[in-house]
Length: 370
Image 1 (cartoon, rainbow, N blue to C red):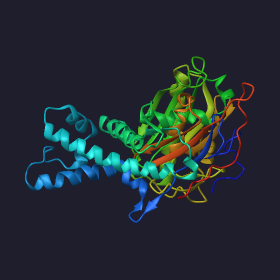
Image 2 (tube, rainbow, N blue to C red):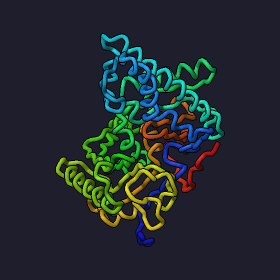
Image 3 (tube, rainbow, N blue to C red):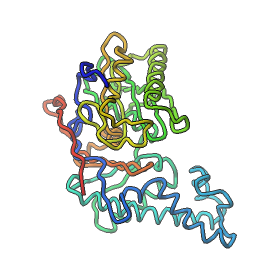
């Protein structure tokens, strides 16, 4: 069990509802119908299932324009090429799957918008791996049109940063602004059910104090699903990746802040433990005997000459936070992340008082229910 005396952060609580720029109104809403969780109807896997269903009758007649490859074997880039290729039949098939998926995503989004936590949402940013394709972009745009036609006054827009970078960049918004005054970069971790990505995020704070020009200076990716490590083995690999990045940042002349921001699936408790939702991670991350932030502080007690601070939040929240600089023209907005499942988070912008941020609160965001 992690030593309770280890201080995991002196900045704010993990999973906090109040952050420097936003209030988190809710996240990971779990809506259900008779078939299970609604989010499963609008995941990356759901799109593949829809496309596969459209192909099956064509395969029986030998008329499948996508050939003999199984649907899961066709990469996103190949489906994107089909949309602009010469084979009209193949393009029509993929467009049909896009339309079906957009109807499903619109249905799930409608249900989410009707919850109390998502009341009066003005804009929804859509991220996740599915957005990283032309197919995904068209599906998002089509979903927006469907909602508008049904008098839902909400805009759907693709996330601006590359989905692989958004979760890392978003962790910048977990930190108070004063940390950027003496440093130009932080360490960030994005943990997923398949991959763990670590990066050095360059703030470019002097060019844009709202962090709109932040970028991932260097990153490392480990596909842990291929290695099936133990929980302890995963933490050791994560620590090595972070130490390698610290060395690289030092060699590159960056002034790395003594701060590690973590994006992680699940409901994050204030002490850094994971209440639930981490079932796809290697080993039992929901155990009361495991605390990732404390483990990282023990392994990396200092960065430079200062004690290390670690702050962890839900992965959907972190990805949404990357959009904070671009959401200042609205008050209430949300994020949907289309990946293995459908992640979601709703935000309300906090306004500055006397040019300074309020101190971060320590309350925990509520997990909205249907």
